[in-house]
Length: 184
Image (cartoon, rainbow, N blue to C red):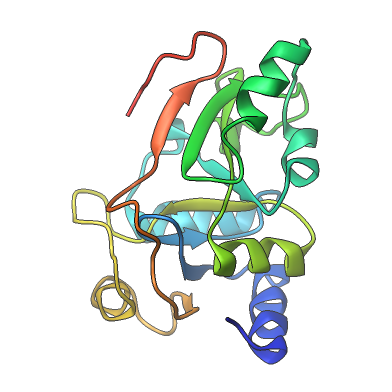
């Protein structure tokens, strides 16, 4: 588990608009403050990724993710909550205020309450959701080890939070919240 010092260092880096690499359920993720447009722009440039794809947000608990969502029925809320915390990402209706840089310009946003202890600890320390996208350049394999992260990104580009990825074996499953249809 992360030390109090490591958590404080990661939080400080995030609050300054920095990008971190950290273990998740299936791969290392790259994350930043989801409400920092400058951090999102740096993340897009690092990955070589289109802004139109949008991002996944992770959280330590439902309360951290709920402000980003427009959950109009108890059934929809229950569908999401039944799989969390865990390695399931849902594409759900986004709250009207959610910036286009997170949603990719859509009326939905991808969200997950993580079961990974390091990722959850980072969200708790930060006090809210974090962006979570695979730690790789677009078109390359996602990193599953700290060494693989360093093969993709330098110390100047990302703060590496070491740890082991969970047992999911790859990126998390993604489902459409309204229909329940698997997207990935």
